[in-house]
Length: 243
Image (cartoon, rainbow, N blue to C red; front, side, top):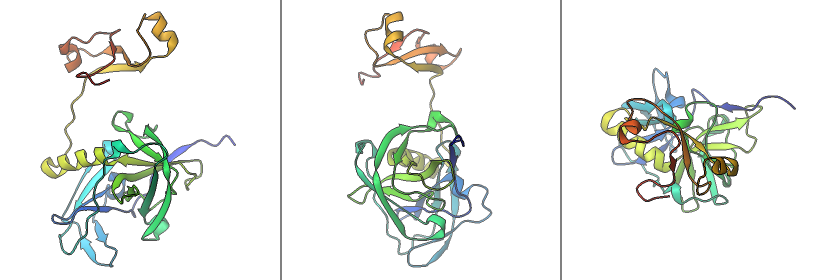
């Protein structure tokens, strides 16, 4: 079967997770709320809330919805960096409109990027917990019930679950959410370099001490990297002493 793999995103109906009950903040995906004239949130006990505001960040496919903080229950955010491949997880959401659905699986991989969107801002958790259209924006949780990811997309030949689900890590979501709440947008720092991974052949030809690091292949003029003195051919093995 030579049919191409694609990333699928659902629109119009999605999931979300209340992360601050006192202030009424809900995390979801940018693609769930993008271009919506009106956003309505339906809670588990069938209460309907109109969004007071919606702020989103396309680069990370994240959005924050603010609703009236009335009798809400929040889910705690966990530390996604502590998750390891093989850890059990559960995905919550409304696949195909079936609300309050939970599926189980493991963390299949970390640090995934896709051909859709800007890979510079992607570092997905990959899971085999079943994710289908309507799951988008819902939480991926660890066995302590902590939200460690926001379910975002699937890689599939058919548009339905094939066991490759992608979630935005909670640490990235938390950072983006803080900026969206405070400023309404996300401001990012940048280096201005193009780097490449190093294999053994490259290490030999450049006489590098090993393969663990990043080789600078381009430095753009006038960028922070250029001003800091980073040059083409530099081999970066640590930042501030951290490998």
